[in-house]
Image (cartoon, rainbow, N blue to C red):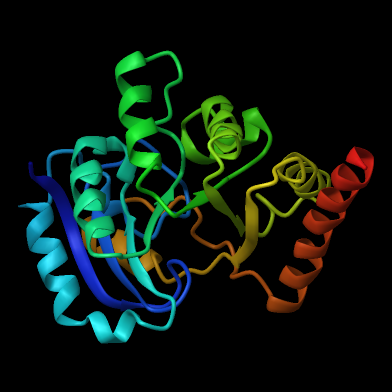
Length: 251
């Protein structure tokens, strides 16, 4: 079994708890306007690697991950390569390595028995899923990513049913994902889940703009300013207000 790998990072600090060995897989069907890794979109690109090669590299730096860290697979979209992840995480769990998937949820397909059987197996080997919800509104989500969000939201419910720990991530983009109504709705949606362990509200930044230029690609958010950190804290509070309301109603 081989996976298509874009790159590896030995000392990731923003991709799950502790210090992480981060695997960036190749291939993603999403076309997020603010994506800072457009070079991971192509499905047939990257370098072919075997799971054992990745575990071997992890083991070389294992002492650095002793602070509650582990192995994170991000992308690209990891769930586009479930067979590879199953083999990788099987090896990881055999070595008592904490496993995490950073996903947009776009690959989730409850209508495919084959996919769901693989996903069930993968989730039995997964300690944490970081689910990046781009937009709670279906129309706005499609405008932002060129993909629907129906199955993404169903994926969150699936993770809850499977009792897989979940972190929600949301990028706040000025004028695009910062509307208080939608932020409150996002909080209200995620407030129903008992497996929710953290909420990461991330500021939009423009660091990906130069990468688009170097790749000869149009950067759709050119001119949109970075998200102000003080405003970001206010926006996170709106999400939390929605979450608290949902949980108060459930009492």
